[in-house]
Length: 123
Image (cartoon, rainbow, N blue to C red; front, side, top):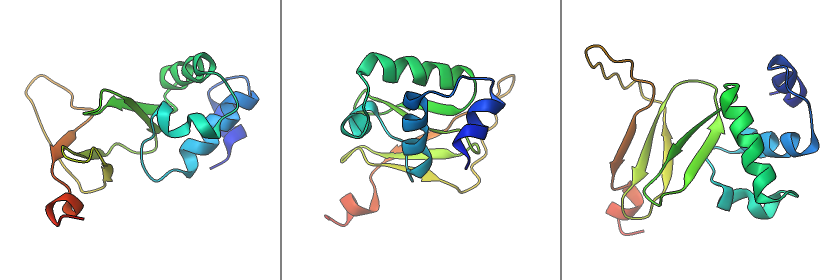
């Protein structure tokens, strides 16, 4: 995924902070919170969140809140569901086709909570 194209397609200014955040999110295989990335970025918390808000407003990322009351972020590539373990709080992206229809509503995000295989098996 080309960072510069991603930013320019949304008519956003390309800054070092934006490149840093997007690079981390693009390379990740799962959604990340601020706490997950704070040691890998060279900006303060306010700059991080200011850019995250701009990315969300422009449809570059999607976000949700987990059991631990943290917000998690990922590149908006395709709609998919997430599984959150209620024991260890691990988050997994689910790529199975899960369809939920609610009359007179448009479902955009599905978060499934339960116990992951590692916790079931005692790992």
